[in-house]
Length: 398
Image: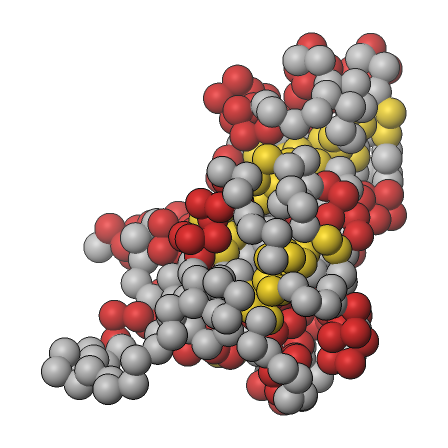
């Protein structure tokens, strides 16, 4: 009964929010009250195109600016602009902790519920009082964005969609990751196979589609969402927290349904523990032992024979990277081009933000029969600010 009541409350909230948004769209500029606050706090306004450019692909690691949603938490969870953080005006100090360590000259763009919403200039001023020097407001906010682009939703909405079977859930990670574990009921459409698997999407472009991948720094769900939106699927949302947030909430995944391995069926083939050059191997083919490499990175003791290759784009690399790593954007290169750019006489370790792109880079070379004896991938969630990196090693696929 509690679950039914919860779903009714959420459904009612979504319906009422739609009415509010429609009223807001009738406005074409800030109300006098909002404009007076913008003028009082000396804030610069930006438009939809500016915000769209600022968020990059839509995941947090590709965004050049930090977006702040000043609305209450429930509205943020129901649907926000991709890559946004939630800092409500009424709980500012508590929510501000999420961005308190960012450089004070980093561009912040604050928005809320449209031209009549006073929360964005209020939060913008609070950010300026914290010492932030580059704060702007997107006055049109979520109501305008939602008519022109897809939204990002939280676990509460994803859970309701999954329980009510009211959306097509799409896992945009590599198929190997999908097989390991995913949200129950999801289908697999890796971003790299989108065109080939387009037939898995509904003919009716009004159907609701929710896409997820490996968390806030994973761009794969945003890539798929952008492609679907361009094809006319306007009822698309991204679950930015992805599988990590789903598991953190204690919700079931397909892993519980896996057939248990026969404890007595031990392989007689002994796997090597180290590569020829001395890199410690992970359990999965082509992987490095994550905890081993993590310790070396955090202790600044990565051996000279190892070359860590950051395969993200140039801007993501500039935002922060592992000390000593080099940048080769693998996704734009053919297998031949990628292989030729790799340093010679080194043990290569690919890394990205969530593990998926590094696995794909490794698979690209392996499928083209290159010598992979000293080429590996690091399966981990990695977030760097400068050379200060937070690393969470993913579970092996086996």
